[in-house]
Every structure is written in C-alpha cells, then in structure tokens.
Length: 420
Image (cartoon, rainbow, N blue to C red; front, side):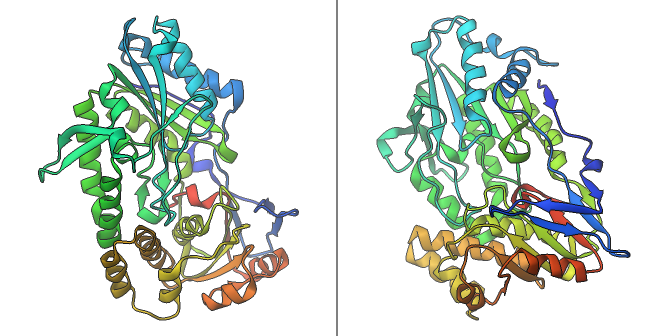
C-alpha cells in the first residue's frame, strides 16, 4: 500500500564515463579530475531531488493519492490524538512535516491534537552518540536518557522489557516518518529512520550499541526483529518513508503500511546503489556533510572499497578536522583489534564503545586498501594514523592522473555500489 514519486534516473545510469568532473569537498575550490587516454574516469551521479515547496508537493501527492491502499486521511478520524514521529534527521524535514500536518488538519484533526515528535539520530555508524533532535520549529524532542519520557510497551523474545517514547504509546494514531537509506559500513540498509530504537529508552539503545560492537553485522537480525515487533505492537499503519536526493534534497516519498512503504523506498533508493565492476585502482570520494566527522569518512571508505579492486587507493576529500577516538588511534598504532573491542565494552563507557564500533567498521571497510586524506586534519595527525596525507587538491588530482582507472563518488557515505 504505497506510492513512490521519483526524480532520479534509472540506477543503471548513475555511473557514467566522463572526460572531466569537479568534486565539491567543503573547500573554496573544488577538485578537478580529468581523464587521460587509456585511463577511464567513471563518475557516480547522486539522484536529483526536490526541495522547498516542490518537496512539499511531492510528499502531499504520496500521502493523498497512493496507488494502493488508503491515503493518510483514511487512517484518522476527528478527535484522534496523532503523533507524527520523525525518526532522526529527514531531508527537507520542514516541508515533509508540513505536508503531513496539512493532510491531518484537512481530515478534521484539531491542531492541538497533532504532536510532532523528533528522535535523535542513533549515530552508531559515525561512532558517536548523536544529540537531541528537533525535527521542525515547534516540535518536541525525545530524550532517550530520561526514563520518565518512556513507557512500557512489550517484551522481546528474551523477556526483556521494551520501553518506548511515552507520546507514541499514548497516541491514538502514530504516523511514522523516516529516511530510508544505505549504510555502506554496515553492509546494506541503514538502521536510522525507524521508530526502534530511535524512540527507545536509553538503556536499549546502549545495549544495541554494545551488541553491534561485539557482533558487527550479525546484530542486525535482532534489530530488524525488534523493529517489526514494535511497529506491530503500536499498530502503526501510516508509514512515510523518504529517500534523500543530492545535496539534501528529496528524491522520493513512499507511503503505506510499514513493510510495503519500506519495499517501495528500497526500490527508490536503488539510485544510491548502482551496479558496477570494482576494477578502478583509485577512488576519489567526498562526504554528504564535508565537516560531518570521522564516522562519515568510514562510510565513504566502505563505499569506495566496493568500487575499487583489492589493493587499490581510496582518496577522501573533506573538511573534517577532528581526529578519531582513542580506540581507533590505538588500533592504527598496532594494537590488536579484538582485544581493543572487548576492553572498550568492559569499561561500560559509551563513548569508548562507540569508538570501538567505529574502529571495527573502519577496519573491515579499508581491508588491504590505502587511504589518502585531503581534510582539515594536520599532517602529523594523519601520519600518526598511518594514512596518506594530501596537502592540497593537486595531490589527489596528480594521483588520479597516474591511475589506470578512477571512480569518483560524490556523497560517498550515502552510496552503496553493487559489484557486478
């Protein structure tokens, strides 16, 4: 029961052979990469999207005229207390929420009965715990560390109680809103954008962090099971999944039951998941947020590794100026990874555990490839991490000219190439 409106081209067209391309990485001047004879230059093109009023119309069309199943207005009746639950950051959030709210009001819901609740990003893939998130002006922010802000909903298969944000449990109708995207470092779908564990009690979020650090991708099956259980227990039928476009725009809006909206969003997000042969010897990548932190570098490295051959070189161009944490640094200085992970978990320090998870994901992503950083980090910091240091864009441009095949990945932290 969903509809998807898209602005992007066919996924097969997202990688194109070009003579030259420019890459914005947060500096005054972009990188300029040019192809040489016998050395193909392949560039990824993020999907185009809408913003502002155009984005609002995109969402309105999805929630009022779905191709299958009832529109949003059919999920509510006057007098219902409705919570619009925005799970983490959503592209064009103001326009998205405005479209949903307008639809609810036109269906007879009193403005006082509509609550917009924002949940913090999980931050697990970035190796840090994200702060409290207010989705739109006037919205409420859920703080998972305040136990009184949650209430008991159900227990999981192991009998552990699961607590969720109290407004969700008290609501007559929950409209779930979240982004559907890829997490290269986790090997597939991002865990952001879902009610669980975005609106879970802090202790549950911490347990997931520890489990991910201990088991890596093996923990995702349990997360998915809990996610579906929570949606079923809440009786969530109105689910809006959005797919990001280039530069924070809105590429697609999919509305319907949770599973169906997810399937539609996955199809719409295929433009971020192009098929290609990993034959390039060099990948040059930028970040969706040039100053977003070292965790985004990890995601970009994971994506670039899927587009380069073993033993290749990955160049990440960004404005990140904060180095990774202590666990990461100790690993790069030669300490064995597994003992570091166990040591971090044993401390119970959430910052160290998040750093350990980040380190685990980075180690798997980089594997036997070389990393060159063009960033805001000082040369001695980069060399201490035993990465290649690029003093300026000309270093990366020269490296690309010497390669026998180059792939360029704008916003690589959101890209998930599929090797053919």
